[in-house]
Length: 457
Image (cartoon, rainbow, N blue to C red; front, side, top):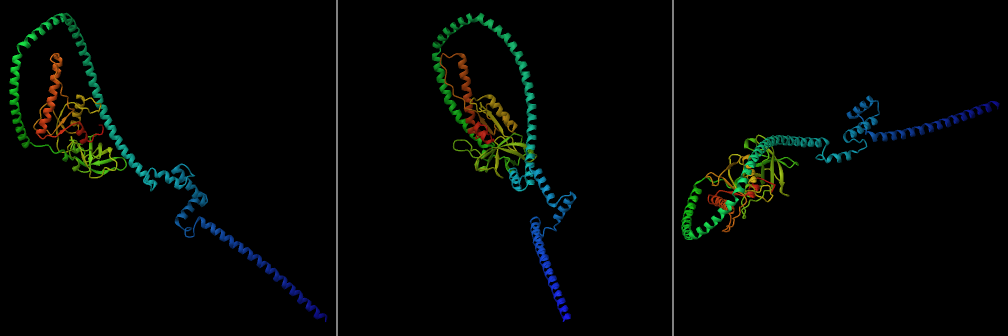
């Protein structure tokens, strides 16, 4: 009985111990499982955070490995190394490490074509090179003008010295004349009274002779009409058998071969070998059919005007000095300058006074400037008051007035001035009529200005 009771107690103790061990193992299993779940969640969180910085397919890329090596060499983290490089690049490009890429692009878009910083800098470099070429050309022109200015100043100084010497001699001579004038004033008054008396007598005496001479003048005028008709016939015959100058409508002197971009510059197919000189101007038309005289005798204005700023061997660079809205200069546009021709030197007869500077006062100095411009641009200036047989163009200045006949009691100086003005008027009319009869193109200052691409008038 006692033995059985001890055995039952042992079983109960063993069972209690087994139950306690089972409970302990269950508690430990629950604890280990809870730790594993937290570790898995933490691993997922860290993996998600890692994906924010590098995708799984990017973690083994060569570029990332290169960044890792560079960061390790600088003893930095990968993110710290990338941020330092990013801020250094923004500081180098924009000067501000806090700028965004979009703000940097917007700032550089104003200097380029909106694609890349490299293209922007390339365009600016090309523009700088063009500006340098233009500056070099302008410096050469300034040097030439300075040399010309120094020569002119030397001539002016020599002329001033000669003028001072002449004025001193003239002043001395004038003093002698003044003394003689004072002495002879009384004698002159007496002689004038005698001349007026003699003039009255002669007027009465020669009234009949004057009438006879007037009749003879009428007869001579009648003969002159017949001779003029004969001269017109001979002029017409000569015009039919002389070489005519080309029609201004066909005076195409070159073409636009390319556009330089946004610098208002173009390239033309004429250069140094074609006698092009720096500063020459041209008028631009779509084609040659537009260069025709209008009903009022004027020529139509082209759509643009050019001025040569750089001369090459076969081509030249020109700057657009005047343009028309909506009609841009394009390739194959024709250029015109009535003075210039690449293969022929036109002959010009420049007559009269001109108002080149637009101050309302025609002068001989402006006419001399026009002659020098024609010669500088390759034309030949003819001289004289008659039309040469090989003349190409007659350039007439402002029409001189037809002076009224002076009164009968006009002084000698007034009569001489009347004769001078009358001669100028008749010479102008005669040249205009001869050019018209001989079919020689006649240009005034305005027509020549338009057909040479001028922009000042």
